[in-house]
Length: 307
Image (tube, rainbow, N blue to C red; front, top):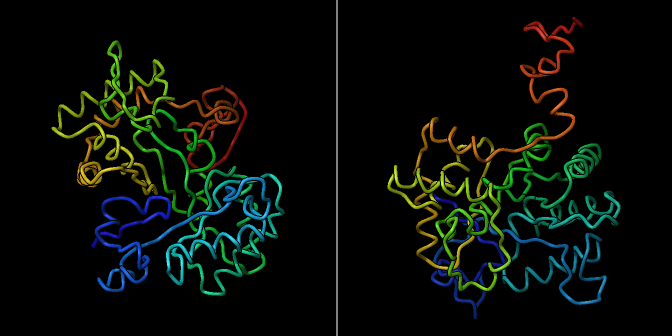
């Protein structure tokens, strides 16, 4: 059975409209159809809901409590399945955040905690703090991840692997860059005002062309090829964002597409990432550590010696 993730921001999606009578609220609409326990409902807090009001923005306990109460009221539900810290505010003490989130879990208003758009070192610090004090920890991280931007592979995804967090990727088709709308040398007739700020780099065009080639080979849409690549990445749970039922169904079909190793290699050859220091110096695995720089050799017994 498919578990459908409904994010509060996107409750106007066609799939939601069919299931939810918004006048009566999410809880009453789902109760009538017996669907509430089959769904995972997520929402976030951090961004200000009211301009120039510090009580409705940031990561503070005040903002946290006000936002969860507003979300429960808007959704007319008694609990949130996954409650995200939306973005790190560079201000609130980690102890205040994790204690407040733990209180929400203890009160039954939240089942699980998530975090997004926050540096890996800060997430590791907060989860370590929570573990030491017996508080609820973050169980997932949500971050921007697509063929044109693989930055999360530097530290965030390795952190998730080591700490046992699931990784939820957003922006998985590059905000439309790799869906067939953009081809080099061709004018893009984009009527979507929200996408007019998108700029295609030479690398983006190169990635898009490979995606289009594979799309023709497998007789699937470019979006489905992007989604299939995302599902081929370990510990990755793509989050789809759509405006129409047609897009929704197309994205779901991408889950059934299995790319070959050769096709994945072709995509990776153009969708490259510079891991930066220290990985470019020491390597990114035991097989590559220090060897490429001629400093030493790590043998299969994990011993290190200088040559």
